[in-house]
Length: 148
Image (cartoon, rainbow, N blue to C red):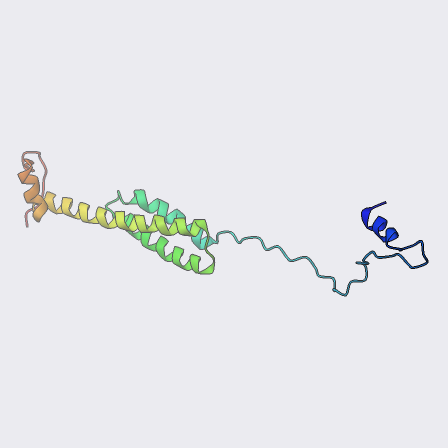
């Protein structure tokens, strides 16, 4: 016998003629049946975010191609990441955004560097004077360049 039934019988619940049913009946509840909540799965990355991540990753080593390739890939990847992150934010979208920004920065640095090198080899600009100050004589190194 459980404790509540024992207490009910001691309080006169069944021996002296009273009904000793002091249990609570939970079967006649007035609450309506509620369906379990729908579990929504988190949305994955969309195609724009994946494309921005790929272009950002390709843009970083693409800066070695005179900086322009990395700059173009970085700008396109940044645009795709911004549009893709408006729809839903995920780790791939944020990664694409970061890689695209890094590719743009490296692209700008690479473009400036290669422009100065090409101008220096052409004998024009401040980079040519810097090369001569460092001891590089382009004519002695058999570099053919045009003088304008």
